[in-house]
Image 1: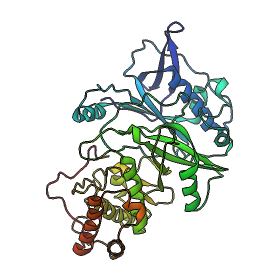
Image 2: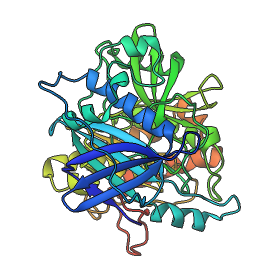
Image 3: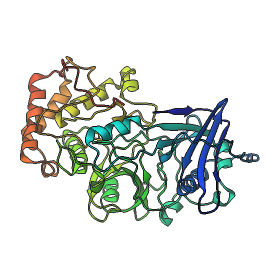
Image 4: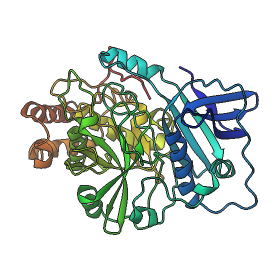
Length: 433
């Protein structure tokens, strides 16, 4: 694994070598004496340039001339081939973050352990660019183009990206970079919200449940197929994360249909009155890649996750609530990066697909509250769930054993009143972040 971090590159350029029909495309960056060369496909270069052009169009215009791009530096020896690209605008630094993830080939007959090992050894490269560098990267013909794959209504809607999104480390075994997205898809970008976005949970629900879905690109670091999408209904546009059923890798200990557990997690949080799972709905075969879940996209700071958030005492009440939620949901994959903080300081728990198993399988990074009393208001909410039973929208997503297990865990939380400890030291997910 070769992770690359260039936070102030002097050069960021794409170019090609070879005869027409046999050209090889390269991405190259230089910071000081460090020269990074990556190989990628023509379509990736075009999509990146076009997406960046649309992103710059949403930001204040640059003053002065844009510098000319230098040529590629020879010899061209790529460190690895790019499998996926992601883009995010960081308002705090007024920089654009470009993340490249290595293309990893997974044999069709590979077992789960092999797949996980390959995913863990995949390399990433992160480049933080000024807007002027990005403008220089974009060919003139792309300067006024809307992002690739954006529908006319979505492209016309004003938008201003304000933050970056957290990496999506999704459920299950690692998956090789997707080879079947539509040819005109875009690239993931954090915080692509619109001035005409709806207000009110009911309206958001209507948009996600019935709106037209436009694929924007593959989410980085996702083990199962996960996509950033825009959902359009009338004049409303909502950014969402789409997890299609067909993109799930089979697991030995969970049945097919992890997307339904994403929805179940939202329904459980709603039943408890805990606003910690973003609005999540199930969509049918009308979705671009068939049935799956749609979860409202959270604008978040990728530099923040559970381990960094815990350092601020002001987050502890919200983190205790997530800890209690994971106990009730029996979350087997609460990584640090699955806890997001939005611009208002509100914490969100995402990637909940590996939950609700009837057997106790809790795996989480949140153990700092072990031995502490569970706050009374959380116990009251759990007791109310036990008294009323699971609401129908949640109950129909689980089998009878799973339904009984949720209520049994809620009773235990109420009766014991203490956050449990892990004396084995083994109940952690991997990777931790």
